Structure formats: C-alpha cells, structure tokens
Picture 1 (cartoon, one colour):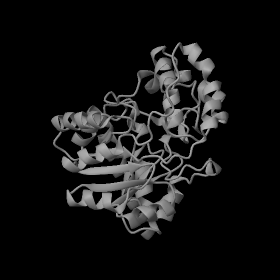
Picture 2 (tube, helix red, strand yellow; picture 1 turned 30 degrees about the horizontal axis):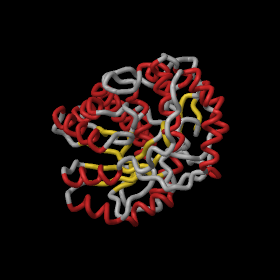
Picture 3 (cartoon, helix red, strand yellow; picture 1 turned 90 degrees about the horizontal axis):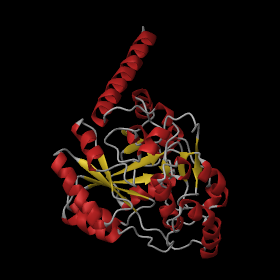
Picture 4 (tube, helix red, strand yellow; picture 1 turned 90 degrees about the vertical axis):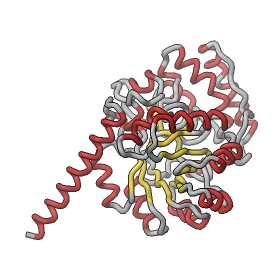
Length: 343
C-alpha cells in the first residue's frame, strides 16, 4: 500500500500480532525507505517485508500525456495548484533501494509491476532474503518461478490499488482474473508457494483461499482504516461512507489500472486517461495532495478493494487476532461438516 498507508507503525503492529507486516517502499526515496526500515526495526524485532516497484519501460505516448495535461488544466485551476512534471522519473529509485536492501538485508522483499532478473534474486538469496513477485496471470507466475523468485503473490482483480501486471497493456483492461480462479490456475502452473491477495476482509475468506490452494493470504484494504495506517483520514472515512458505493479500475490518477472508490475525478477523467505510468502519476500528484488538503475526497485517489464496505476500524494488532479467530472458526466448521458427511 504505497503512498503512505503502509508505514513503520502499521507494519510493526501487524508483525507484533503474529502477521507479516509490510513496509511500502514505492514512491519513497531510497534514503526515505532506509529511514523507515530503521524506524520499523526500533518498533519490532519480528520479521517483516519491504515492497519495491519495478522500473517502468519507456513506451508511453508523449502526445497522449500532453492531451491529458490539457484536460486537467481546469482541475489545477480549481485546486489552485500546479500540474506535476510527467518526466519526474520511471525507476522509483530502484537500483539505490536494491543496494540498500542487499547491504543491510531484511527478511523478505517483494516486487510489483514486473519481475527482476535472476541476478537480483540470486543476490538476495546470498544475503538470506526471501523474495516474492506479484503476479496477475499464470504466465507471470511462471516467469517469476523461472527467474528465481521464492514465492508469488497472486493478485486477483478484486484487489484495491494498482494491478501488479508485468506489462501494462490497455487491450487487456477489464480482463483481470478473479482470485479463486487465478489461484487454481497458478497452482497448476508453478511449484513455488502461492500467496493470495485481492478482496480478502474476513477470516472465512482466508480459509477459502487456503482451501483453493494458496499457502497464505495477504490483506491490504482490511488494514487501511486501522489507527496505525498512514492513509489520509478522508480516505479512511470514505471506505464505509454510503456516498461511495462501488469500486472500479481506473487510469485516471496514475496512468495504470488501479481499483478505487468511484468519485468525481474518476468519473470525469477515467475514460480519457492514457496508458502512461508513472507519467500520469507524477502529473496528478499535486492535484491529489491539494484535494486532500482542501478536504475534498472527490478529487483524491481512494484506493480500495471490492470488500471495502467490510472494513473494521480496529487497531491493527486486534484485527490480526480477529482474523486468526475467524479463520480457526471457519476451518473448524469445515472439519465438522466433513465429519458429519462421513458419518
């Protein structure tokens, strides 16, 4: 959950409760990531993970980005701010972050928006760091396994935030695979462990993905409203606000498909946003910050999974405990039912 939601406080609270907390390094500088790792280590001695964004290839249509910039001129005027520079960078400080994580290893590193080379995986293996690659298709999972990843995080189309596709192809917009189907397809394609992610908000859902073949489950939206989450208060409130009734995938805020609560900005600009990540992300960055400062959720990127209405405003550690209890209850019910059928 890049952008501030998943910081040291949330990762530490989850880790202390027995989960695997993740520090989101996306959109941070290399030094910013390092400082947060140090802060996280001061809060917990338990294992944790760090998520990195892969560098993006240069294939965006500059003319399309210029057209979108012109379309957003009215937004800049409305929020009394400047549009950002779309050419602010495509690599998210990737090489510098790798150097830090290899020099001062953490237990686990995951990758989103692509798959590293075997050299990268080998380097992390040498320092004792486990690696995970976010995948959205069986083919991506196979690439991750061939490249040397220790596990894959299977992201269903239900997931909030950006779809972690390895190649951003506009022709496949809306063609994402649901989590349960994707788990089965990936399970039959690769031999490495599978982590399930996308729309999971209850322990019974975790039980379902484990029964479908996943080795573990990853939750994001469920923790977005916790006190330890760094998400903007307006974002947290919107999760269960009846004004926001559904989510959709949009390119409006970043130029890459991402699932969020449908608001005015998404409705007005989503249909015209080009496939240009991270150029559009840089372009709209100031607008999103200005909207948040103005208290206007209609101009913010309200990333959320399809289960957002099930969000519970509990402390992160307590939420982990509740999910574990729900998981145990669901598993016990399945065992009881199976025994009843045998009898």
